[in-house]
Image (cartoon, rainbow, N blue to C red; front, side, top):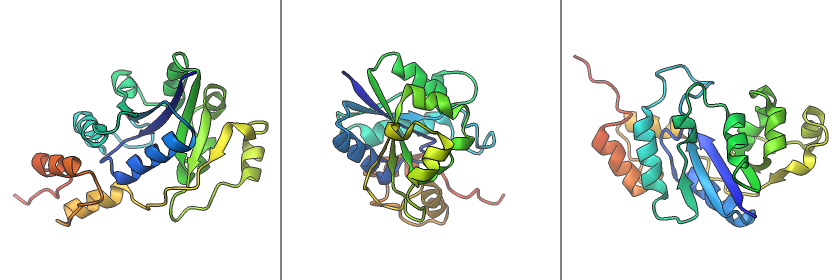
Length: 202
């Protein structure tokens, strides 16, 4: 039985928090592989507000290169239209016996507003990771929103790193160091491609 973990997001940029979450889920849930799935067209973000997909793919490839349990998936990038997680999970479930969608507590709390969330529970289990500044999910609210689905959700104890891509972009724009917040090769890529810098005045 193949068990696949799925970590989606814009990864703009990918940082050590993403990697630590993937490693925790891989170990705690005995996953065979963790797929990092960059969104092609995030439906919740305005067009043009996300760094080009080529840069985001390249940064993920650099970040996960030294971990044989991590793989990059282009499934959402190569599929036209908005990147709905449910479509991705259902497609991956065709080739795997067990799919686990890895979500932060913040994202899990937004699940009822997602595109057809009931289908997600049919295709995958959920692994919820704590996030600093957000309360732990309330199982009672899960039972209310998705009755009968409680057994499809696992709650991981960590890691609790409190990083965000938004904060990392802001640090770069302000000329501050992001060393130790992203893998060294990702930091070098951001510097080389001059990503996230404030535009200079003409």
